[in-house]
Length: 290
Image 1 (cartoon, rainbow, N blue to C red):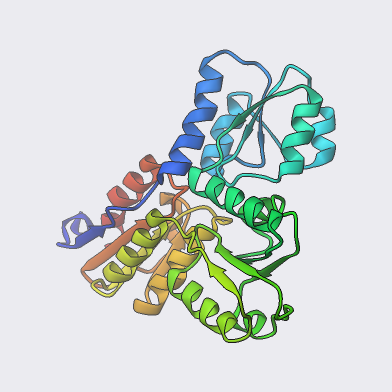
Image 2 (spheres, rainbow, N blue to C red; image 1 turned 45 degrees about the horizontal axis):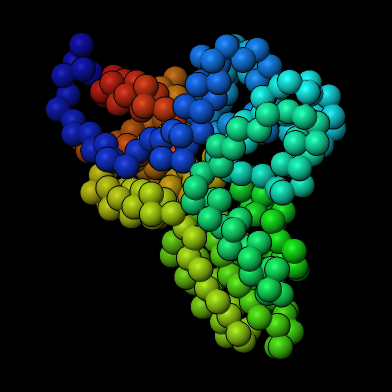
């Protein structure tokens, strides 16, 4: 009982949890379920959160992740494109199969697709600042009609080699670290001429990172909640860890058993793919750690 009575302060980030694009995508799938569609697929996990994907699977939603999977779907199936978006080729293959496409690509990601399609059509070399293996970046690459280079580190930025007579358009993965983006752009600008820079990091990501950084400077321990494969959650963790050494990355309240919280002020933030109920459960159970 004494543990419950310890007077601790919890600082919960206002920006924690579902962003607009993720909420829209998840709601889109549940809407398809409510309509009674029996054959519902998502191209890739709808979001990077295992709890949400598991719930959808229990409701009959299946995940497909390759061209081979598309070949096996039924002609009257509904395929929801996840918030990360996908390539133009994948969309064409689904349409060719006769399935109904419901596009839940985040509007901010869709904007990047349009920029890349337009600039590549005009002959620009496309540079994407982001994680080459992330599904959002894989999707963005798939809308380019010209050469694409993906940059994720200072080393890669320093080694970039593009002809001086080539026009270059730089875009970013929406969840990329804002500070790191500007650093990499600065390096590229010193090596490449004729550059157009479009900062496509979404406002929600920037605001979430700024708030998380601020909270991490004010607390004794910091908790970052999100799926293991969530890129934006990983970046939140890295940002918080720089400011607060006692920063922990967890997925659900159960993971609190493995962390050693210190001090009287605890900060909590969460990635864009973390449901509200999980955040509330973590917040409610933190006090039992003392």
